[in-house]
Image 1 (cartoon, one colour):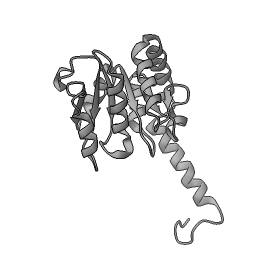
Image 2: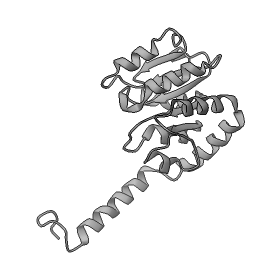
Image 3: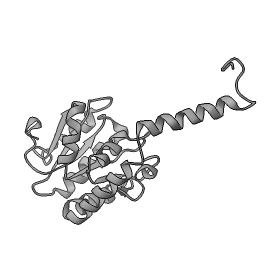
Image 4: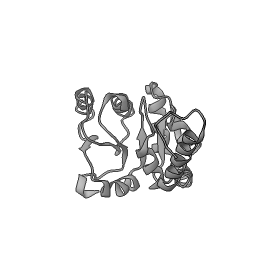
Length: 194
């Protein structure tokens, strides 16, 4: 990961840098834990209300340990996921959480908020954490850093779980929804004509 100046093992977040991603809490939990020789990498574009997150990342105890990469090219993401010690996703609200699925497919162990739809997506294949509990995040980070066996188990489980998702499956399921909606007697008039 020389391209991004990453020389030590790191925990990785990928997504927009914004409040709903809960990054300030993640940075504080990481800073309090202060794992020796481990960095925290946040990869994503600065979206909205990002200044507090940047302020947390620039805290004197975070300097040199928390890295903001800004936008990372899509072609670079698989290597970044694979190089990470673990992928962390503390989001407070999600529509789906595509980076979580990408991380699992790449073989990264995942630590993720226990909210829906993330919890259903990962099942038993990730370490689930209460998004608003800084102590729980600190404990989860400590556990994932300290246990190579746990990382290996989560990486294998995540990779297997990711095979349940594909764009082909998403297209088939979406088509089924449209077929059901359009075949019933209660379909909107003028929406579909046979």
